[in-house]
Image (cartoon, rainbow, N blue to C red; front, side, top):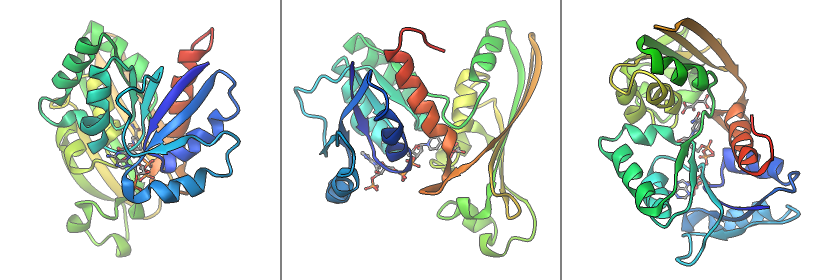
Length: 267
Ligand SMILES: NC(=O)C1=CN([C@@H]2O[C@H](COP(=O)(O)OP(=O)(O)OC[C@H]3O[C@@H](n4cnc5c(N)ncnc54)[C@H](OP(=O)(O)O)[C@@H]3O)[C@@H](O)[C@H]2O)C=CC1
Ligand SMILES: O=C([O-])CC(=O)C(=O)O
């Protein structure tokens, strides 16, 4: 059995915990959350058969088999970097944090220091295996379009670009590089960063973000060309009720990745 510490316990975290309870090979022993929400999370987890301990920091002597981050960009610096340096393997969903200059190199250095690895999870997108394999032969272009319901862009710079409450038609709210997208939209453009890290890089991957008042799904489209040929992918993600910015597939991606560490056959 693998003992896991989870960083963050919101829409993704709770969704993953519910599914992981059914897996005898995995046990989430602890969740790490901000002090302000510690009590609320404790109450939310009370109905679980094996409620994880709710902490605000990973204790200095803690040695979980795996640490999984599902908290947000700031948690990478705060929790993942030190855990890697201590030799704890980390899985992360807030991949957009790596758009900050120098952070990827610091994560790599910390993982080397600790003799361990950091795994960037596909989250809400598919095709990462194909794209990163295509990169080996050489990629020419990768275009990512992220389309979400207007409400999913609330609390983001899109509010300055348009009137989200009265949008009549689908509106492009951002056009630029994956790096800019991930920095400007930390809760909505992790997929842009993931695709770019697998493919052409943060500065050469073209990104378009759309607020669509007629959509009820988070639609991710990828067009890639290179020596391998080409592929077009459209993924229509169902948003989570607990956080409409986040697609349900992200929860399943976390559960799959953890399972792959524990089960005899991984896929
Ligand atoms: N790769 C992908 O495809 C995707 C990645 N994501 C990433 O996952 C993150 C989480 O998504 P989601 O679960 O929907 O978000 P929620 O806001 O529902 O939950 C976030 C949870 O993390 C906690 N948290 C926030 N900051 C920290 C921190 N520094 N240390 C510990 N805990 C923290 C929050 O606590 P509190 O409530 O107190 O703030 C909350 O419990 C997103 O911010 C995004 O970066 C999301 C969707 C797709
Ligand atoms: O969950 C999704 O559909 C994608 C998302 O929020 C992100 O890329 O950050």
